[in-house]
Length: 103
Figure 1: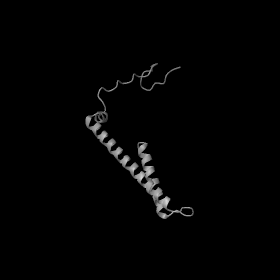
Figure 2: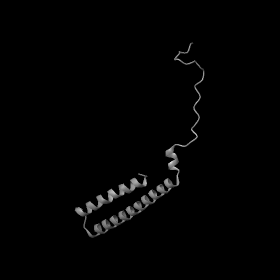
Figure 3: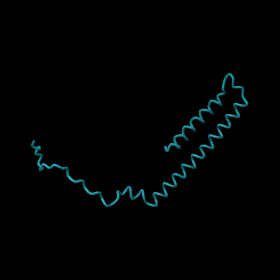
Figure 4: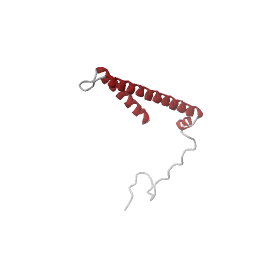
């Protein structure tokens, strides 16, 4: 069997892979710099603060709703205020869930 000639000599083995570059990618260099580390740390601290504030707000809303439910006869109909509060709690809980997942 004859190898097709595409302008290069036929060989039994592939061409050697190029050696890796000795210098880092500039994006990697910046990511490893002290400034980048400080910026990441600042972002993480901000995110943690926002998450804690969100949890506190969720706790407050849930307590308010609990108090309102205890004061109201809810056998037949929930008040519009209770429905709005549950929607606000749901929205905040979803936001906190997303942040907890890293988003």
